[in-house]
Image 1 (cartoon, rainbow, N blue to C red):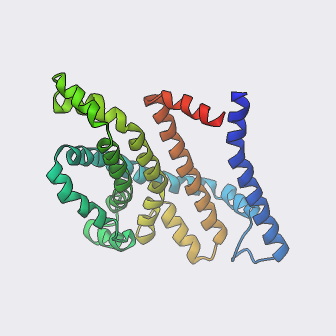
Image 2: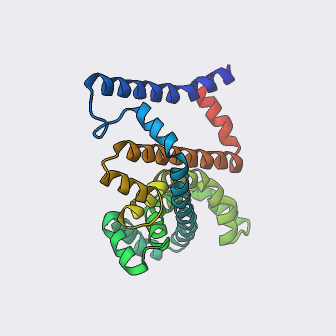
Image 3: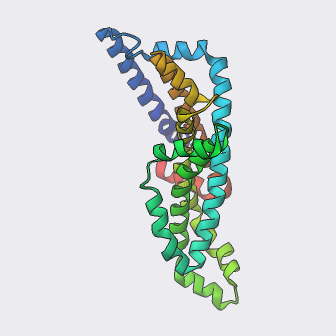
Length: 259
């Protein structure tokens, strides 16, 4: 029963996606919309196969930028959340500034990064860091601040120091929030790298999409979009597996929810 429930749970999104693609293909064929305006899924997949080697080359550049930026964003977010949790006055001083930074559109900062840091990888990595940093630090900080104070006081009464409390009490309790923030950031990571490439690059999916758009090849643009969506889903799934490895008890909780 558990296995059948799990299979059904995994099949529902796939079936839903297939239905949407079938409706899309049927609508395009019946309405006879020109391919340069709205190609159907069949043509997009055909374009993806025909340009696979070229797209693979551009995908490697985009993923490298996204992985470096995401990794640095997680490390910086962890350190910042730790500092804000440990020092109350720092939390009060820095937290409003973090919120304000999210009101600044990334699309306006990316051109400045190109002026300041050139056309290499660094501006794209910085864009990814800015996009991925906030969800991780906010979720982790909320998780650290939501720990039961009675449990913290119990460990302190046993002689545990500040780092001992963080390592044995706060961090384990905040891990679900930490991984939730990582999943949100992972879904944005590839997109952030592409945004950086839109504004200036010589390689990557964003560069490929810009050239295709100027050539009115909507099918090529949507083929790149399919790759971006697929990479984001795979990335989130990898973090989901990491969460199960770090917190194996979550597997049983999910099986119980499916049942």
